[in-house]
Length: 219
Length: 219
DNA sequence: ATTAAAATTTAGATTAACCTAAAAATAAAT
DNA sequence: ATTTATTTTTAGGTTAATCTAAATTTTAAT
Image (cartoon, rainbow over all chains, first blue to last red; front, side, top):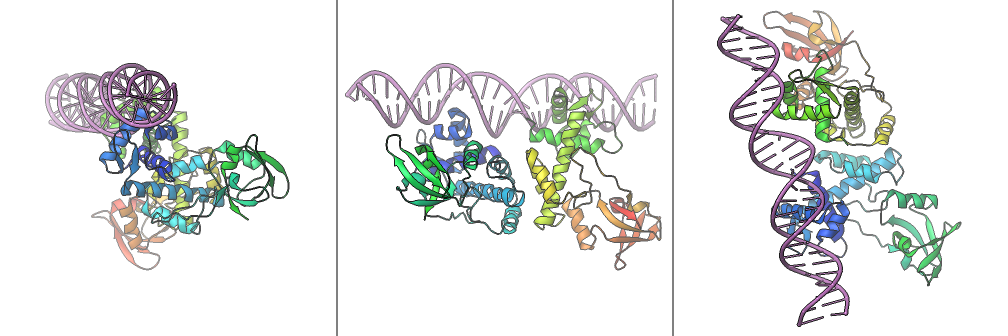
């Protein structure tokens, strides 16, 4: 039986390696899990024993097929529970991450199938992230970081990079949610910020960092 | 922050002391939690440090007000999740205990209020057990063990003593569920068993042990 | 190509939660 | 009232998961 701690390590390695990177370094994992590099070395060596990650000294860790399956299942569970919290219990999107973080560890073969069905087999969670299928397939969507759009272009918000309460509350204050239209008015060269019109109404200036964290579909 | 293990100990002490007993012995707790008496001594000493139980050597443990609050909240959570599993996800009553056992440990002030509301503030769980209020009050119902009824009397099943899958499956096979009418046809003296008619149809003979585990309301 | 900086691993400890075996205290039985 | 049986506690250890500090390896920079 796999422990919560082990599950969290697998998920962290998944997150790090899901885009570009070939393997997850000790420090990167420690950063995500708020632990020390030494603890990470310890754990990935144990996960390697269990054949859940492949690991070479000083070269970082990557998920084995078995480890990848566990990580994908965790993400599926996390995202389905987030849909439950928002759709059924009427939580707001900035409150759900920490609760889902706990619920994802519940072990039951039956439960997630029934939950998925009950929720109407949603394909995306309340932050716009795709919910992998039972088989571990992620739906891919053409989406761009807002800061890749050119002046005059308009995008519809379909996702956000981070799920921190503070960031989401900032968006709430600006009345920005999934589906919101964002039109690029001006790209300011000197500090790389972007002036944006929100739903044909208010204007706001996003620092590059924020614009990068908003995912849109071109309109 | 209280650990899962600590929570389970508090719940075990609650179960033991909820009816008659003044305090929970080491062995009794060990029995419920499938652990050794030595481990129990260890833990109740630590819980005593934290003022969650009051404990005197060789005299067993009982819950402090703080410990009682935690235990009651756990039971509230457990039973509300059981209602969710049956009413919303359409689980059958014999499958839910182990899942709820995991879900009861999820920590969120908001979550349980919202869940309770979503479920329509149920007062009893799918096994007929009362769901304590937020304030920790249990609804009390006049109910009798089936083996206390006399020949000719009829009861309606409102609860069961145990939640083991095997026991509940045995009831399923007999088509016995909450609400089922049970009429005492004959009390057999020589082995203390009881002949019962189920919903004016089939007959069955219950050993005393089973009759004791079925709670009915007199009709 | 060396040296400095950063990342990673090892060594040695700690804490929570468990264990077995032995000792001590309480309860039951003659 | 002793003896026996049962329950509980103590003593000494183990494992998973963490830590800090020191050593080692890799990467970056001069």
